[in-house]
Image 1 (tube, one colour):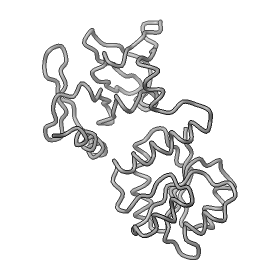
Image 2 (cartoon, helix red, strand yellow; image 1 turned 135 degrees about the vertical axis):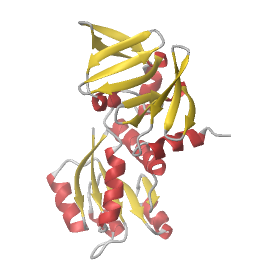
Image 3 (spheres, rainbow, N blue to C red; image 1 turned 90 degrees about the vertical axis):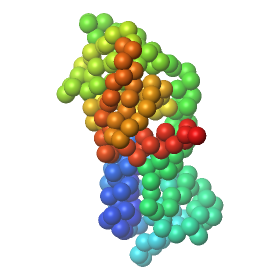
Image 4 (cartoon, rainbow, N blue to C red; image 1 turned 60 degrees about the horizontal axis):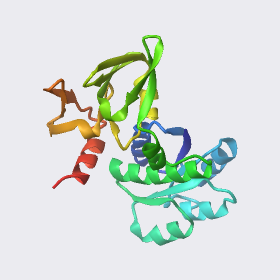
Length: 241
């Protein structure tokens, strides 16, 4: 889990970043700060791995605040102005996001930060883990079943249970969607709805607010939640002719 804080004097900007954070299960939002003074207290009070830091703030700018920190967390600068980019990177910022911040650009910056943090912790990066592991074990029918990622079509959530749908059948396990999502590689699986996670490689088509996959040789339509649509379209557009 990556502990993060938001430092921004604009309530709307805080809300946008908080909304983006809520869609990434590996991020844990500790607190929101409106200025550098509040942020300084938060850094002394909590273990913070990543800070989303606005540059233009009253009293002390984000750049000047970062210069005061002896051991700062990883930083992603957020700003409405592009003329501070050089200053940001000279201070070893992980990335520099221009407002308004889209979810796909936000994810790219976060993925870079998460990889750096995990490597510094001594663990493998997200990409390394994805290549090392192509399966997961889930508890079902009083035993641990091996489920290969490539066999999964989609995953459906039903309260405290999830149903893993595959060509060979289904596996029902006692687990929440959120906890399972954290164990799946984001390069293969994406949450498209509060009740559905889909294997990206299994998507056949998108139409309106529906994703089409093939299940048992027949088309199956899955709903796209409004909070997940932008992220999914960003992935699709990267592979669009």
